[in-house]
Image (cartoon, rainbow, N blue to C red):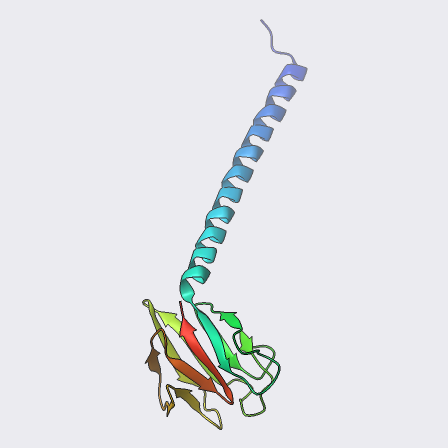
Amino acid sequence: MEITFAVLLWAVRIAFLVILYLFLIRAFGVLHRSMAAERAATRAAGTLVVERSPARAPRVGERLTLRPTNAIGRDAGNDISFPDEAASARHATLELRDDEWWIEDLGSTNGTLVNGVRIEKRERVRFGDEIAIGRVAMRLER
């Protein structure tokens, strides 16, 4: 049996499609696993619940979802921003490291308070602690 050029061409086309589909299946699998890991990290991170706010934003009772690293302040480019003139543009960072939350004041004018005490350096924050930035107070929750 002799293989003609047309049969060989069809075999090459089919092989190309099989390789292409295998590549796409693998690529989408990697993308799916990456997105699932990101959702799990976000879900496990925590939330800030607004307890006190002089302005309309954020509202008292509003839940602010946290990422593993969060910039907080008045500037709209922050992960968590609110229009409080007592807060600095880049006021503080709240970061999850080794399953523990850490907050650091970034040299703000009015300082950052944890449970009513002004922090001077990077401090550990536990669930249930109150964080005050400017005139906005938030409680860290799961």
